[in-house]
Image (tube, rainbow, N blue to C red):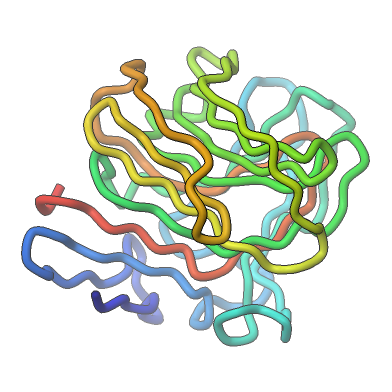
Length: 220
């Protein structure tokens, strides 16, 4: 399966290529200017009335792909219940696979982060995330700004180093992986339509992300 980097100057989504019934999009952030976010992405927060966290592409020579990553670099709020979002609606995801490399940098209330999919807006989406402070890997749905847990697994991985996360969605079925190992699997039907994709942290969790790859099945 071939992945493609974000082409400089594109304003919507990165280039894609059909491989049989699949289409692949990839952001490695190498062609995004330092201090910016990828074209077509936006920074938001679940809930209202709080300052937005700052997300930027920064240089990180430890990154698994090149020397640039997308990172939450400044929290800008003091709410333990705020979910920090950086996402795009330029790719419409229903069924397929989303993968990312991530590094938990800091956080006292919360740490780590994860992947969003089938995002309708800032208050309605699925998310799977890993928290090294709590040693758990969890999947949630967020509906009308309220988060509800679907599944959880006890996982211990060190912060401050790179790991990989992947989610596979097919209809109401999901499977979620950390460092290539499947920890979560089940069914949920809260969001049945295609939506955006993106990255997520909670509260004061400052996290870096690299190699964000979306594989759409059946060209959706």
